[in-house]
Length: 354
Image 1 (cartoon, rainbow, N blue to C red):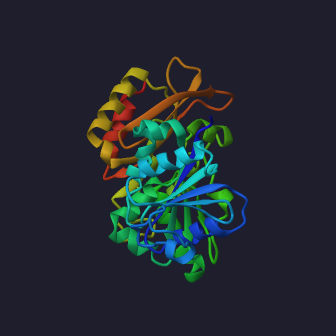
Image 2 (spheres, one colour; image 1 turned 135 degrees about the horizontal axis):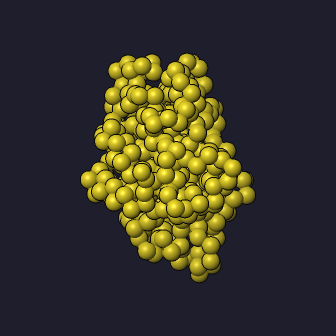
Image 3 (cartoon, rainbow, N blue to C red; image 1 turned 45 degrees about the horizontal axis):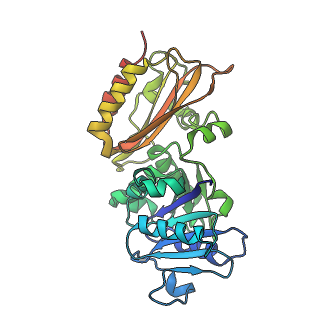
């Protein structure tokens, strides 16, 4: 039986998660979705749209969707949903999980890799993060949880863009892009996100992502078009313009985001054993600080692309399609908290085959 795709919906207080959840649970969109919401969260939608017995935590909505409030463990909630679906008591095709506004989405994402029962029935599709255009800058500066939500995102929506100037939206977009260059960013106003822009993003399925967009990391090239060179791939092409993504020269004076990103590129192939040992070592030391990492690797001795990605200490890799006419090139992006960028770049450089 096919695994059920799960979307994690995150965002700081007031970012618009409840508006989106209400839309899912009440509008006639024709999709069979189970929404899991944490009733201990700051935005409890039950009082607004649900009338239910206090002992009942799974409710069938009029549009065919399911609302499940968590009173305990997420694993238990997912397993209970699965059992009721298996017994044909309820029907749903996908799940959306709302995290509380001050939550770190990391442990929620890890659930889908660490719990065998959950992994047998569900697959994590993507982490979708909402950022409030009006208060986002302040929240990012004051709350590391807000930064983590951005760092984990596969898709970012800037909400309430009608409440601020275009210049303010662009400044926030630029900051978000430097924190997480791998997540597309879309502004929305006076309304909710179209469900097709939230579901089936395959953010955690790297092979599928590559089939759709084999150059998904090239966005980084355009982000730094103002760095004064064309990213030609000489021996220093991975240095990302020689700066560390701090924001002082990108109109972000005063921002010292602990969560930042950097990219490694090389036209030289990796020595597989060296790279495996190095990555194993940095995960042991820095795993908790490494939020998301992802890449396409050029490995010596293989005519196929190697794709890898991970969350904290959990890393996976797989063979993808063959290198075609495109240049063979490694492209890796790392998003983390206070990562020693120079040390990691030098270590990766040392893993290249002679």
